[in-house]
Image 1 (spheres, one colour):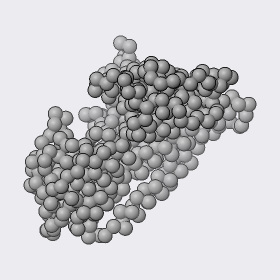
Image 2 (cartoon, helix red, strand yellow):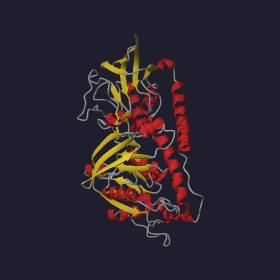
Image 3 (cartoon, one colour):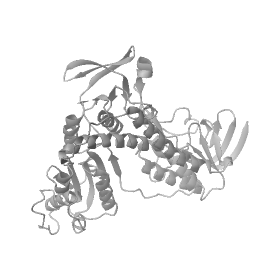
Image 4 (cartoon, one colour):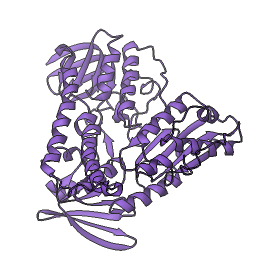
Amino acid sequence: MVTMEVDVAIIGAGTAGMSAYRAAGHHAKRVMLVESDHYGTTCARVGCMPSKLLIAAADSAHHARQAPLFGVHPGPVRIDGAEVMRRVRDERDRFVGFVLEAVEGWPAADKVRGHARFVAPGALQVDEHTRIAARTVVIATGSAPHVPDGWREALGDRLLTSEDVFDWHTLPESVAVIGGGVIGLELAQALDRLGVRVRMLARDGRLGPLTDPALQKEARALFNRDLSVVDDARDIQVRRDGAQAQVNYKSGGIEHMEFFEFVLAATGRQPRLDGLDLAAAGVRLDARGLPEFDRATGQIGDSAIFIAGDVSDAHPLLHEAADDGRIAGDNAGRFPEVRVRPRRAPLAIVFTDPQMMIAGASFAALTAAGAEFEAGAVRFDDQGRSRVIAQNRGLLRVYGARHTGRFLGAEMIGPAAEHIGHLLSWAAQQQMTVQQMLDSPYYHPVIEEGVRTALRELNRKLRLGPVPVERCLDCGPGA
């Protein structure tokens, strides 16, 4: 048994853990990183990057099929599943390699392999080989796919999670995607466009993360048009039937039974807390079984334990995890001094087609806070540039504060949402007014002119400041 004393022990070497390690090292002499599984990030290995590689292949196939709309007539589209998945794996491994190179470049004395658990506040046992006494601890153990009870036993190797998809060596014939969240939507649409027979079952009537009722209605209409979606699936039951997976469910009061090669459980992710023995650390848990912590400091209660990244179940996004790690690591390194750190404006993006985004405060957040706000909107059906590139679908809604005219946030499903989301989150973070945003430059013809249309409507409702009247008269109502 090896024993050691350190200033900061960090459990987990993903995005948050790596960020915490760097931040803590600015203040503490001895920082120890403990990892029981792979070094590196969920994003590079099984999340953001491989999923975008699959989506890129699907988009390529979709654009080829769409070419005749522009008078361009290529040959028949042929999808080679083995080639698709080879590029996904090769590029995924390249991204993972960059992360591994960074971690492996850190001193060997700062890393321990094994599963850590608390044996007392500030005391960790790593497997049966190492005991660590730490002045402070950062929990950055990430998350894992959630699988409904009994599904593994019922389906065996016919069950998949999102973490299994990117190790395929070819594309399957058919997949039932259970879950209408971000992961389910992105993978279902990509597989469908790559020629896989897909049925997506959403159990709560919601598709994606949008919270504005008008945006949810739009999302359901658009995805039901493009995908085989059941957005009111109930009583979902699964079992293996030979080499196939049998899926039974109810929709509209009617019972259905279908067969697929695989079932993909896209039913969310859950924090990796099992085996940490938080009770031994004296950590209080909330009603969901998660540690109670201050998001502005990362500190759990008033203890010397901090939490960062997906394990907190606050905002499971890479840039948020990196910020979490920086905040928690900085405070763990300088403990007992704990500083409140400002957070960036919220930004979430979904890489479906059309894309979705939430920038700044969401409709649900504003409503829950009792905020006094107005909303402006634009549809992209007739927006000039959107029609030019045949991506004229969707809706943007922008929110502004009554009495002050400050821009608060936006939700969108439509073209270029990943870029528009950045612009609007920056505006929210800078606390710009709607009038200041309208006074900023807009080139022509671009999709961002639709943002201006929505802001103009919002400004009229706020009844603050002058409203420009000039507009392009031949480019549609969203110009």
